[in-house]
Length: 359
Figure (spheres, helix red, strand yellow):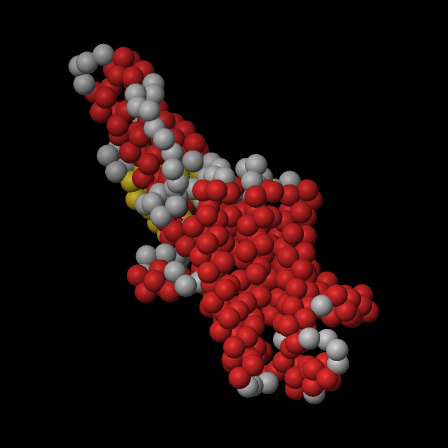
């Protein structure tokens, strides 16, 4: 096994272009999907409310800290939305509000939730002040903690916390590592097609050592890639991992193992290199779309898509990464997605190796 690993790393040092290219592409996409989210979008707001009430609602809106809200004239709002300079516009009235949306976007649901909460807080405060009771006392009681609350998790609930930076970085990293791992595992198929595998079998090297060497190398290269992306984003662009950076790196281990097993299964069912290319492209993009690499899985409402996401490893790694960062959970509290990933890895590896040996 050591000899196989040594040979693989020697080849990497001689021809590092493919690894560097894939890592560079991953960083580029993580930058555009994550770092480009540093600047919050601005949403135009037109209000027919009184100046005082408008200020109250605007303050509630800014508390969400996901978009910037700017008060404009009605004609300017409609023009901005119509020309695509803003994803939506907001009309405020004394007793209701209206949202004008240019097109469906992944952040539409989050925007609606923030506006609904802000306007709801405004109406609640307005009704309290309109009663004859001591409104100051009521407001103080509402602001005080009246209950003892134990927070378990926010996942799989109607509301969720959205961080566009981490969504983009996590999503692109776990997506592109599929290609990096798969195109190293494919060396097994290439070796068999070129009859190199037969020479290995006749040599003193055992078959399990050949498998282990190639698969271990694929795991190491894939893991190094995602770790590099995370390090660049944290220390190069000062991305906030909410104190869960080390936990994130640990969680990537079972995920990369799962991708290695998935690659083995794909190699086992591929007749040649061309078939493998077609399958891996289809599988990787499908997993990314269904599992929540491109957009938060929490905003998906289609039951069929949600059902398919339950057998998608990206679903579980995205959940685990968000849990240890955004929601501040410990590694022990993320054992469920980790266990699912390890189970997937064992099943796919077993089936894949079995199919390889039968061919």
